[in-house]
Length: 125
Figure 1 (cartoon, rainbow, N blue to C red):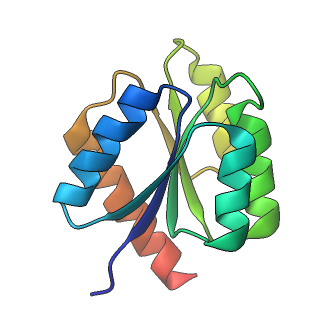
Figure 2: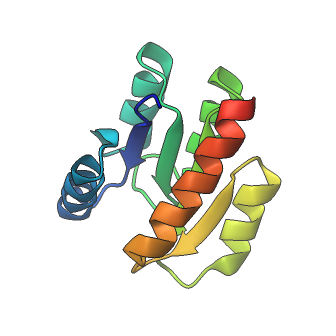
């Protein structure tokens, strides 16, 4: 099986770093972007298979970044993270092409299961 390439996009640097370490320990090749512009550059130059995308960021919100990702590479599956009790924004993200969304604080096992399902869908695209 090929190694999953994951991009974590979150302005909370400590959260993104910790999550990246946990993914790497599970054999997932992981990159981090701490803002929307950086995320779109990484998607353009080195497209991942999957993206974990925070909804609330200072430069661009997650929905804008999602639209940019889907414009560049429609087959990249995106899991939105919302930490502000906003299920409506998570649902809006899914309407705009996100694979799914999870509430912060995220349960690692739930996230891993969503990543597995998203990668299966990505692999069939």
